[in-house]
Length: 283
Image 1 (cartoon, one colour):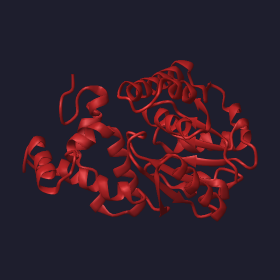
Image 2: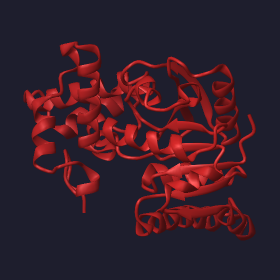
Image 3: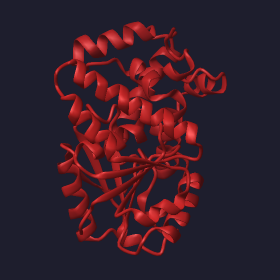
Image 4: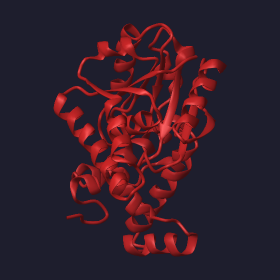
C-alpha cells in the first residue's frame, strides 16, 4: 500500500508532534482540528520545534521551510478524501473516537488506512463502527513525539497483514521503532506503566512517603529518568485516571482500581502540569 498523504486529526501536543515527524519524513500532511485557532496553535508548536533545531545547528533554514511547506491545515473532515492514511489523536474517550471513525469511514477513500493514537482503548471496538475493520489499526506514539523512538502498533481483531506491514514501514520511515502488540486493555506500555503510577499514588495516599521521596527513590534506585508522580503530572492526572478505569473495566481485576487520591485530585481540577497543579505546583 502506497502512503503519500497523511491526515492527522487533533492539533494538540500529540497531534502536532505526529504531524511534525510525518512532514520531516517527506509526507504531505493535513493537520486537522475543529477550530482554526487550534490548528494554528499546532502549526506554531511545530515551527517552534523546528526553529530550535535550526538554532542548535541540527537543521538548515531551507530544510525547515521545506518541512513546513508540506503542511496544510484543515477544519473540515471532508479533507480525509485526500488522505492515504489518517492518524487520529483526539481526546481519550471511546464515544468521541467512535463518532469520529464513523465520519472518517464516510469521507476517506476505500484504500485509506484509519489509525488511532489511543493509549488504552480497544482498536477492535473502534474498528467495529466502520465498514473497513481490516484497515483500522493502533499507532500509539509516545510523548514528546519528535523525541521518543517507540511506536506501539496495535492490531485489532480484523486488522489485515498488509495494513500492519504498511504501518510498520511508515513508522520506520518516521525514524521510529515499531513494536507489535495485540489488542488488550492498555496494550503493553500503559498496562505496565499506569499501575506503577497508581501504586506510587497509593504510597502517598497511605502516608508511606511524600511525592518527592517516591520520585527520588524511583529515579536514584531504579534509574528512571523521571519519577512516577512527576510523570503522572506530565501525562495529565485525568488521562491517568481514564486509563486506570479502562484497565479496571477491561480486566475486571481490582489490582487496577484507581487510587482514591487520584480521583480526588481530578475532581479538584488538579490535573498536573497543564493546569499548574498536580502532585507538584507549576509556575
